[in-house]
Amino acid sequence: MSTFTPAPGAAPVLRQVLAQASMETRLMLRNGEQLLLAVVIPVIVLIGGVRGAERIDLSYDVDTFAPGVLALAVMSTSFTALAIATGFERRYGVIKRLGTSPLSRTGLLSGKVLALLAVEVLQVLVIGAVALALGWEPSVSVAGLLLTVVLGTAAFASLGLFVAGALRAEATLAAANLVYLLLMAGGAVVLPASAYGSFGDVVTWLPSGALGEAMRAALGSADVAWRDLLVLAGWTAVGATLTARTFSWE
Image (tube, rainbow, N blue to C red):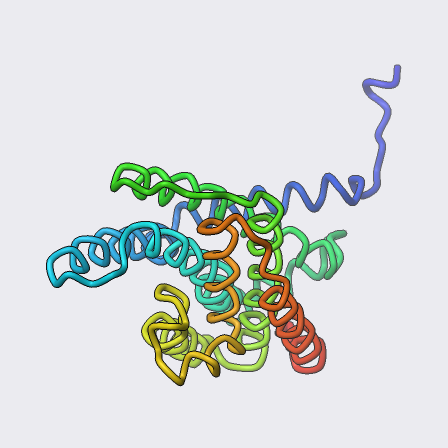
């Protein structure tokens, strides 16, 4: 009898969030540009950095590059990829239409964050495997690694949503890629802050520098870089506040 009895109503919130996260993850993995940012570019930077340093006798080796490239991967997924995807979702009215579904705004954002974390697990597996093949011997603090990934994702995701919610899709595409390139080259995410000389003290206050230093501490010396984690928490608060005040859903 119950098999044929209609049961109208929304699904439980947890099931809605998981369904949204599953769909977001599949969309990210099917998008060639997203895969380029998430996996291809970090792997190229890792191999090119290690082999290039060997050729010109730099003091940096795979133990230096591997944590930095993992930090770069977190930044590329949670900032650049998220900002571009959300910007074009606004342009094509996807978010507006989701507003007519039972999924709340909190559920929508939770689904996006879970999708980011799922993609980052894939990134850690792929980039970690390549680094191990190059001779990486990590000394891991699991607590430090988890805190770094979570706070790094939160900081860059909040800033990415701020950019996507405040600018048009084309401007978001340009701004997100420009910021990504600038931080990758000069933000102390791939190389340690000490490589930037006196400017190194400044870049550790950037989200990229704090993420890179925290990742190197978690995977290089098995430490928890509390100071850098606090910097990431501060950027999360700034990004979340700006997003809440400026984000436009249409």
